[in-house]
Amino acid sequence: MAKNGAKRSFEQAMKELDGIVEAIEGGEVPLAEALEQYEQGIELISYCQKVLREAEQKIAKLSKGLDGQLKIDEAPELGEQAGTGG
Image (cartoon, rainbow, N blue to C red; front, side, top):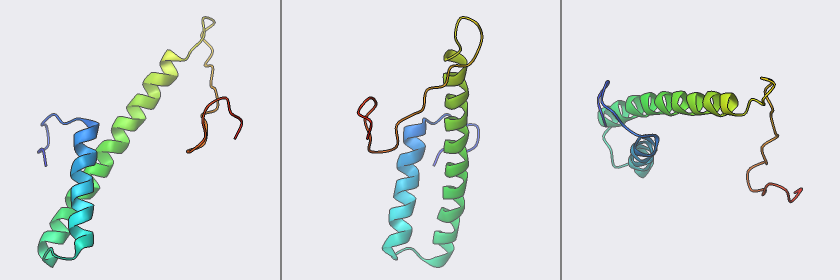
């Protein structure tokens, strides 16, 4: 895992998190190592949430109309495609 201050992409963090989950779920990791990986996973989740919040704020900023009012379109639910109505 990249240490604090090191640059990492959202995708890299998600890949690291996926590896941690697989290792812990596999049950082959000793308890002490599993706890350390769990802690790393929590840090990765926090980082990913921060990146997503920043992206959401940037999208909201870019979505403002010419009048300065925020135009928010409802995002489709997971599994739905935009414009299909379900």
